[in-house]
Length: 559
Image 1 (cartoon, helix red, strand yellow):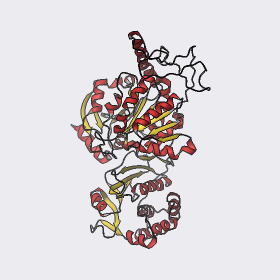
Image 2 (cartoon, rainbow, N blue to C red; image 1 turned 180 degrees about the vertical axis):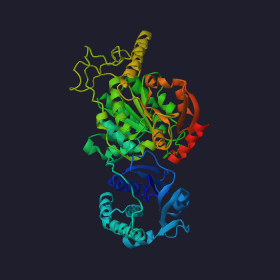
Image 3 (cartoon, helix red, strand yellow; image 1 turned 90 degrees about the horizontal axis):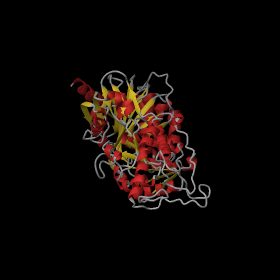
Image 4 (cartoon, helix red, strand yellow; image 1 turned 135 degrees about the horizontal axis):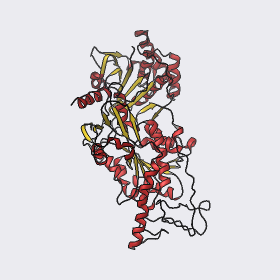
């Protein structure tokens, strides 16, 4: 079958290896010089429930998934029923024998073959990998090689099981059913957004990462922990979110580049310490990967409801930076920028994202040329050393405890109370005003510092103007292949890049976001006085499929 986009959907119970099978299929596609985009839909359950993964494959870069799948592999009866309506025209839908009597669904003896080839725990997920390889015309040897590489246990049993399914499919479909015309040489490695964030921070000198697992930020902690020996970053699983951010500030006090990450509920617990970072002027990178709803919300799904929460994070008045990546390459470079800016301006920074980018998997190259150079401390220290010395920029000289970082007579004092230049607590009105004015000068310093980076992104030159931020830009870029419109994406949200966006003052725009209230539209009205023709909102925790978004954009444009 020749297709511009080929979508594969795998469904089953939690614990059956749905996501792993999808990742291996994506890897097989990449080895065929194809582009992939993988989105995972799963419940907050260890066992049971319903999980599915959707892999979109193309000969050109693909930014989002499609509503209808060309190949579906269902591991249980619930998956068959759930995804019957997700079949594209001419789709192949495979299931286990006995799970469906629908004539559109093709039964395979998955359970019988598992009993035949496994003595203990069986891996039904390998069926999807074998089916895809057979339909693509990928050789049995290549299939076996990737199984050996990706499934380290029960190797011989895995090979026998997958080979048996492969043989059934090749007998039924002797000719490849999935073909692409491509001369592309796409990136050969697949990353998630969280992996790119972790690697970007590492490239900018990250020493310590602290977290208490909270989806969708959890995998940053897990990834850095796995990479500790090769990358040298200490990933610390703290006992709570409060402990994580306070430990991170402690590491900064000792002169180490540190970061924390969580979702909305966890970040709410960090808020008091975020203000502490503002008062002690700690250069701390914070990663907020939001989920839908208040409290625990919908734990494993996507949403953009935390925009104002991030912009107004922390009590009291102090300068901070908030920015949101619109693609995986930007997730890498932005994490590096924000860590560097935190140290340059001695202010906390927030990288705001959401599950669709955090956990979405795409084959991309690491944009190493976009990593900022590590700052060299060129400050001239006065005698005596004053931690909060009043300066024109608002940024004070910074020393750390230890013989290698300070002199014997230096007093290294950080104070969460209002303080004098030395760090000694003060309640005197003139001192309070002087210190507040010093910190307030950072607003201008930060605004100038961010200008050396790309603060907005634009895609397309003709048609209606559509504003979005974060991973919603991915959904729009895929829709843009079929519908002419301009995409405008503010990357830096605070400070707002007014100079780059001034041309859109009073413009008529469409706004797309994942929230039940038009928060981003309100934000743009405040900043640019735009006229919002339509708000396209989704707030069920799912991302927009390309087909669905095109229909909503057409409706908004024609209104």
